[in-house]
Length: 394
Image (cartoon, rainbow, N blue to C red; front, side, top):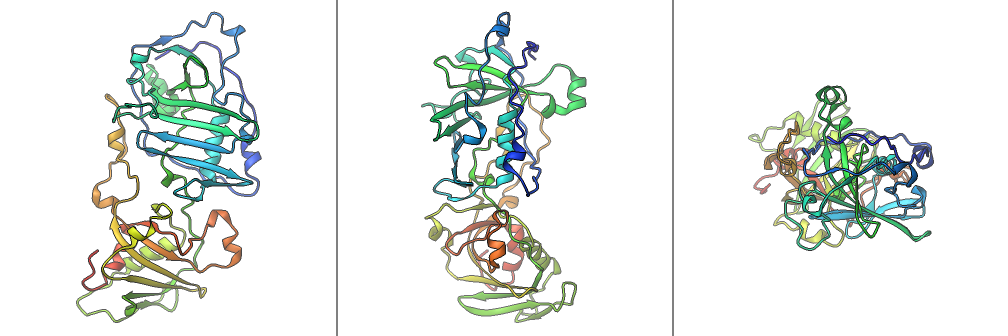
């Protein structure tokens, strides 16, 4: 562990939550994976003259309110967030609204980030500390560093930095009291100056996620519950499940006697349409390749408020850009994250047409799904109903 230098850096002191959120309620995001590494081969910089020298900022002079483009990337790819007026969207090929609560959390962390301690790190140690620029040619395949770029078109200012590994305190009591997440500091390599500088910061910037799947709005409008589900194959109605009330007895027509209907099959799909989230969205322009299958399977859903929704089922796939948490662990790290098996991450591509009133369509946090977009549903949300189709390869 590095001893603190005593220089706490500049404090921005701006209440960004009040700036960005007026009426909506912040959703608390959770991070299931924390990566920590034990450090060596580097030392604190000489802080004897730090009081007379201004410390660099992670924002590099940017006003947090004037940022209109954010690029977050790693060796596997990345995501671009673009601001247009008051709206934020994910750039092509995803082209979908940004999940605003997550963006707010990220901006809050940027505003609060303090570069507390400058450290001397040789380029030979960049790989060990996860400070190699993933955009650099010849980056290692096991590289876990994250590159963040911030831009302001109105001021022509920008900032670039690398998020690296973590410094865990040697004091086990501190770790036990605050937890590893609360007590660790993160290595941040600034790319703004001619000579790269490396700092330790208590702000981990966990919301700097380079996967577009975690930035899309994945929330459905509230549903009043499902009254009827109709299964169709190649345009022909095969079976129907209906009930008179939310807790009424199910009425089933069209199912062969050997096919048993579990109430959980309906409840799972009911729960999904009543505010569930989808696993991802297919990049714009690639919808056709995800919807190819020999037979056309459809689910027509009628809710108790009279709205009708259509679900056309495409291929059984795996979620876009799925990342196994166990592959991101550094040597000597303990994690309580549960790796997912292939059975747990299976998913279907579906084209969903939602019937919703204008009042709901105008609410950005309850974004509709348009007819020309294809989303990814986890198997657990839809597979139980697909099992009711005869001879359909699911």
